[in-house]
Amino acid sequence: MTDAQQPATLSTEPQEAEAASRATRYPLLALPQVVLHGPVDHDMYTNFRQQVINAPADGALVVSVSTLGGDPEVARLMGDELRLLREYSGRETLFLGKVAVYSAGATFMSSFPVDKRFLTRGTRVMIHERIISKTVTIQGPLKTVIAGLKANLHEIEHSIRIEEEGFRDLVAGSKIPFEEVQERAPANWYIEAEEARDLGLVLDVI
Image (cartoon, rainbow, N blue to C red; front, side):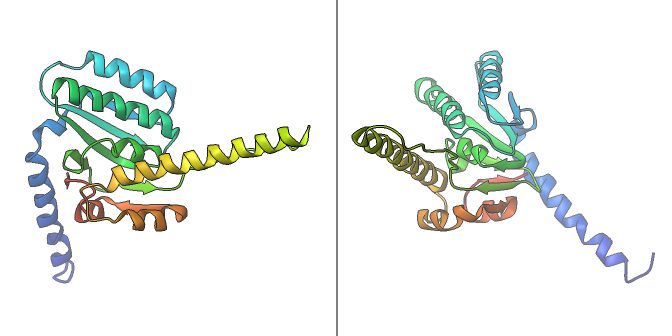
């Protein structure tokens, strides 16, 4: 090994030592009681419910998540289950994102306070707008057609309100303004773990 190569090799040691030090600060995160991975769907919800039931009744509940996305309503449902658990039992719940916390995964993360969120090194969070895919057929009496079009418009408007509520929950307590999420979400906003920590979106990276 040449002298020129040596500093580059050694320079990684402080970073690794710092990361290891951060991990030891949070021993509870070493063994999550609830481990979720894959699409956010009803199968994940069933798995989530069973793992929560089987988890020890005492102490903090750590939920580990890795997902490329899925159904935002299922994500909201799982988040609401944990909210009720906190409010009725006072139990602490912690979020640990691994590798990918995309789309509905970020929606689920938003149900945790920012000081209860953690990411592993190299993890990305991706935030985007809700997507709708629907074909509208105009056929029938004119008044019925108008009512149908209004119903579709109301569905879209209500979905936008739900989306904005989720964005506000996601950034509450962080340094990220709600308006920035609105601006960047349409183009799929990817946030690296360290940036998420610096923005206050999560407490720390391990």
